[in-house]
Amino acid sequence: MARLLLIAILSGLFFGCANWNETWYVLLANDDYHRGRYQNALQTYWDILSSRVEVPRMRYNIGAVYRALGEAEAAAAVWELVEAGEDAELAFRLAYNRGNLFYESGDYRRAYQSFRRAILLRPTDLDTKHNLELSLQRWQSRQSEPQMSTAGGTATEARNLRDAEVVLDFIKRLEGSQWRTRILRDTPGGYSDW
Image (cartoon, rainbow, N blue to C red; front, side, top):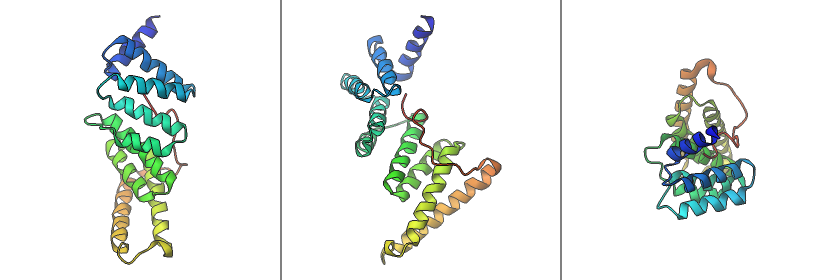
């Protein structure tokens, strides 16, 4: 009982909820999400959001549920509306997960840009570094395909790729032995929700 009370208090502080009733519903929605009951979680998150002016983390959670449901466009649209402000953790999660969405859709340039934002917020995150590297490799391979180059955009894209390679090389040198090649990470429990 004391543990449940402590969780409720910490969640109230963490989410900034105005009352205990709202905090309880956030906990229930998070539990539904982790148990795979995405529709219940989504409905609860929307209900909580509609009762408040704006809760960026709640909107982020809604995007995470859409992502879990396989609705990448809906997740991206919701995450576009999230204003992280001074919340560095929220900004990191947004950049990381948006990078994954861009990567999965084949937009490797935007994936690289999102992972680069995430790496600036959390420089020691190995999953982000790996995803940054994969995005850059895919972006480079796309640029080397003859049908992808156009007369107007080739010089700009080539310059952007060179800049990206310099950033990646710098990160590799800083990290030394910590840099490892691993499969693209998108762990459901990792950076999905609160």
